[in-house]
Image 1: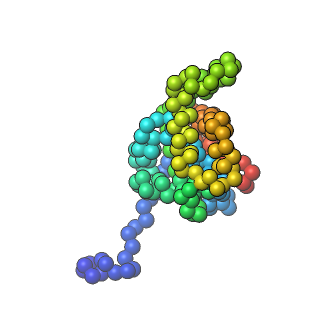
Image 2: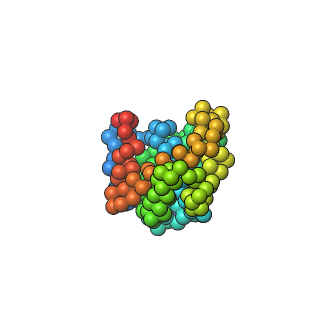
Image 3: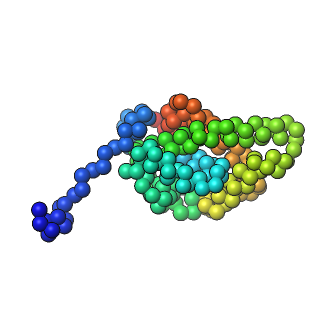
Length: 207
């Protein structure tokens, strides 16, 4: 083939194969894209993972590579664009996640949650103890650190003009409660079938 032919506008690269790991999550009949609520929930779970460990987004990209999800998430810009489908974000793009993209995010969330199971359990246990004793959260350094990072991420990335975001921003305790609720959801993702549980729960009330 000549160079001119190879540059023809009709020339197309072959499609990249679908990552096999996506088949571990069941398809949903007659559904090709995700609702805004689903997109928001996935991004918030990723936000909680970021708050759990320094370099959280890099771990997500590394996980995408380890699980051969590069055809869907090949770099940090792609990951950022997928997360900007969350309507609460300042950088909301009004784009919609398709089902393979949503599956990839669920798989990354569940994989990272499994890696952090011990820490998640420790933080939830510490929160229960602190509540029972009526102590402030700053009495537990690691829990306080997680909550502080989560609040910082949320405030910098979410749009305060959104009514629900504004409600969370009204008081520090509101954001703390959201951060703990997300920890509970991440614990739900751990275990051998964690990804399937999270995936199915996304569609409650959707189909």
